[in-house]
Image 1 (tube, helix red, strand yellow):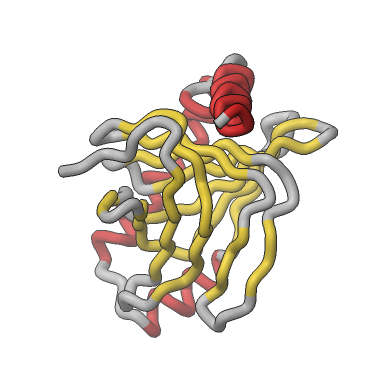
Image 2 (cartoon, helix red, strand yellow):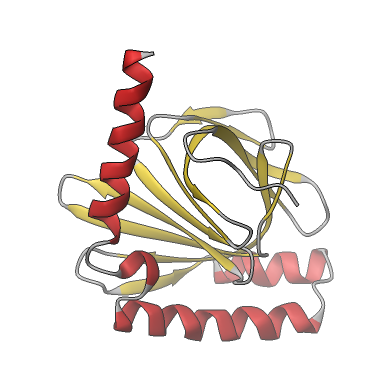
Amino acid sequence: MTIPLEGEMIQIHSYKHNGNIHRVWHETMVLKGTKNIVIAANDRTLVTESDGRTWVTREPSICYYHAEYWFNIICMLREDGVYYYINLSSPFVYEDRMLKYIDYDLDMKVFPDQSYTLLDEDEYEQHKKEMNYPQEIDIILKRTIQTLKQWIQQKKGPFAPDFIDAWTARYQFHKDIQKTE
C-alpha cells in the first residue's frame, strides 16, 4: 500500500455507495501521511460536483482522514473560530495520488464553542433505501456518531486544543517552501 508524502499535492475523491463520484477536491496538500492517517490542508481549492458544477472553497481547512474510522473531519479556519464539518464516510483508501472514500450522507457540524448538530438525516434515509445500504452500515454509522460525540467532549484528535495550531504551522511551512522553489 502506498502512502501520500508530506508536501505532496493530492486529490480527494468522494463517492456514493453505488460507486458514483460525488465530489472532487482538486488540490490538497498532505501534511502527514501514514497507512492509517492522512492530515492535509487546502485553501481556495477547486471542487467539482457530480453534475459538473464547480466552486472554490472559501477558507483554509485542515482535513483529517482515518483508515479505521468511519468519518473524516474538515476543520474550517474562519475569522470567528474553527468550524468542523464531519462527513460520516467509509475509511479512506489511497491510490494514484487520490484519497478516496464513500460518503454516507450524514454530517455533523461542530461550532467553535464545541456545540454540534447532526445534518442530512433525511438524505441518509432516502439514500439508504435507494442504494440499499446494508444494516451493518446503519449500525456502524450510529456507533460512529457516539464516538464523535466522545471525541468532541474529550477534545480528542482534531478537537484537541493544539491540533489546529500545529497543523496550520506545518501548512504555512510547506507554502513558504513552495514560494522559494
